[in-house]
Length: 231
Image 1 (cartoon, rainbow, N blue to C red):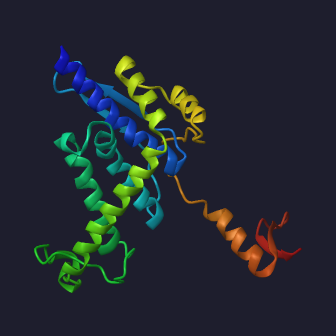
Image 2: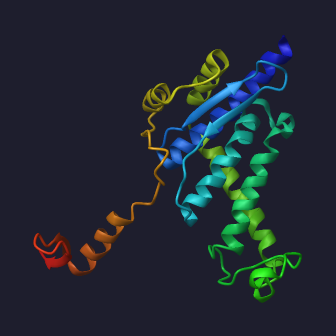
């Protein structure tokens, strides 16, 4: 039925948008990429990894969440973006909120809580001035939505390729997706789902002290302790 084909294409475009942003920003292959519409209420899914929450990765996560609706907007027009992306916007809002109010990734150093929260566990000792962050949360969402637009505008051919394949096959296997990424200039890899994806702190540590003191890390073969020696 035409309605079923339309639904499957809509889901395919939406999930392809998520996937392109995810691989561009994290250099990772989604654990799953599915667009199924066996019935009218077909659905899709892009599987992601456990990622260390930093300011950079949190903003990237919000961009990925906004990219599904942005793909719909680019292809079908703003007037025809569906309500199906409300869960993505909800998660994006939650992420921006905890960034600023809980994780200390904004201007405020205190933990900010709603006055409606329970006072159990010391909540009565928190900062309740949430109004200052409302505009900041909205600005984060708008900024990351535009980042999603830039990424997708630069990968429209890839968006079409992924969408067509999802409509045809209903899903894309990781190895096939990796090959598509390589075709369109994205270097992405398969990552063990049991491991948390981190920033690469070991390399940054060595880089920092290498520049500062021109030292390098050497393990002592007798004690096993790590020592610093000059070049």
